[in-house]
Amino acid sequence: MSFDDELAGIDGVGQADLVRRGDVTPAELVGAAVVRMEKLNPRLNAVIRPTGDQALDRANGDLPDGPLRGVPIVMKDLGLTIAGEEYHEGVLAAKEAGFVAPVTSDLAARFLAAGLVSVGKTNTPELGLVPTTEPVAYGASHNPWNVGHTTGGSSGGSAAAVAAGIVPIGHANDGGGSIRIPASCCGLVGLKPSRGRMPLGPALDPTISPIVIDLCVTRTVRDTAAVLDATHGASAASTIHALPAPDSYLAEVGADPGRLRIGVLGRDPRADSSHPEVDAAIARTIELLAGVGHEVSEDHPDAIADESLVEPFVRSWALGCYAQVMNWSLLLGRDITSECEPMTRGLAEIGQGVTGLDTMIINMAMWSITQAVDEWFRSGFDVLLTPTVASPPVPLGTIRTDEDDALASLLQAGDFAAFTPLQNVTGQPAISLPLAESADGLPIGMHFVARHGREDLLLRLAGQLEDAAPWAARIPAVHA
Image 1 (tube, one colour):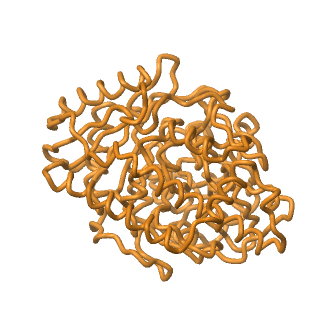
Image 2 (cartoon, rainbow, N blue to C red):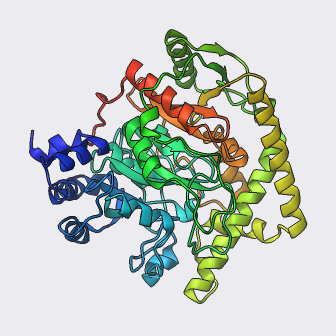
């Protein structure tokens, strides 16, 4: 095994420890990641704009002495900007114009201050709208476990790069499951933090949606905790602040979560059927939870089965899509609606018809759902378990964005991503863990949800399950 390959098997916290001990230099870490990227990315199309030369210059320079100094990372090309670097959000018109971001976002600045070194920007569906990564602008990303299957979305490029061992950490964000879905599809850890936990802005978009939040995808629970430690906290643009954080999220990993009362929703109550391998994964996870001492029962918030969730989420999603299309039109100096993919055009049209009164009604509906879910937790439950997605990763081309009926396309995507949008509505933290796999070796994530502000509890539970059912030995077909 080569030195580069050995580094690929070490997580971000481990790589940072090597740098602190003087066993490797940041330039060696970054150089090895660049080699792996050049070797593997042609098969994956995960990194759409490599920045290896700039990364090596940065690694050889005066890096901040942060907790992740020298560790390579990839940055999703959506919602995070670095001044002077191209930024496209999967939009073909932005790519053709070579649009360059004028500002560095607050989260990007925190990544850099932590000592992380970006080796490239990763693929995303147009405007991050669907749970697969197959944009017209850059083409499909391919799952390292089976290159004919989806990586999930919208952080699919980052997830593929991490799963393949190119880097240990990939930036990701989540407006309906876009951290957790690709984590499930690619066999990774994916934590969506509580609303208000992470910084927002300076934003290119004219509005900041309360359902979207950033963090990362990683291979280990401790890497996720370390990134959260290095980056959490409100920024000047934040209008919502999360409950206080513990002194160290990393210290929560390995701490005893105690005996938890865990409810279960194993199937989408709105669907006619469920996937048998997902059913089996839920059953095994229930056995695992009981085996480590938790109380598990088939109980869940009634709001999950409430059809009233669908309309406000779809209309909010459509309004956000319209705002993004109009923002890009302003940035590029022309109306780009006709140049967008069919689903994007259709959703923008729906969003254009959403009035101010509609927005208030949508917000009221979301608040009502949030209250109902919180009441379930306050009735005595600590955690809710669901599948992350409704099936193992589907073949590329299954989730369509080229149909004229945008609503039908979105609802089809929603069938796959049935379990994750609720937490974007309620603002709760949720984590996907790679606890299962299908008969043909595709990852199946298990999804755990806690009350607002309780990332600490999720990280304790995740660390316990990582110890009880370790996943590190499972390596995809395309890997360093």
